[in-house]
Image (cartoon, rainbow, N blue to C red; front, top):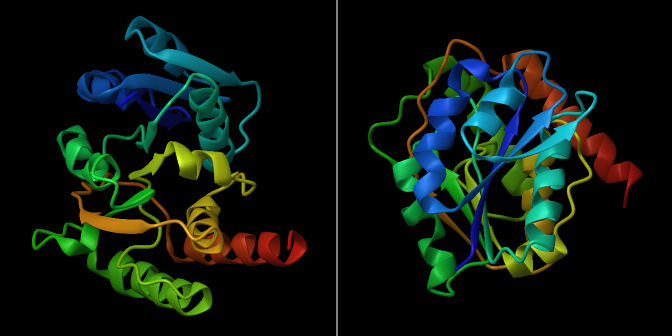
Length: 220
């Protein structure tokens, strides 16, 4: 099936070439340069990825929406969202898309908590991620073990129904919400996340929650 790998990118020059080369065997690579001020765009072009450019930094959600719309227009049957910072493992893409290929799911979420070798830092896991998962599941009536993992796959049907309006990191909860609202079939599969020295702190987690709730109640 025609598969596109969408990589949202903002000043990820240090990782980008390696990430692009790792995912090339699994589909057409599309890098959405979200207003980077480093040479990410040039690196992506040299690595022979399709490069879409935001003139200003809008946020990861906006970059994914740009990539999704491009893939939809180009006839994508499956889209994989893949972070540019090297935390995800390209070799796990076949496992991620397998439920879509089998017709078992329209959307597949990668979960770092379904593996025994979970590398999530203790405080991040129990003070930020686990409470966010519990809150999201209760509010939306879903059963997921992970809330804000950027490694996911969508079928064409899901692409046609899900529009991302949250420009920032709250897009992850918005996608889950729209999966539920549209009655799409979803699955989780175990994936590995290797952490760099940066990421969302507790305050960042609260901001994601606030952004999602604000968008939810102002865009019914």
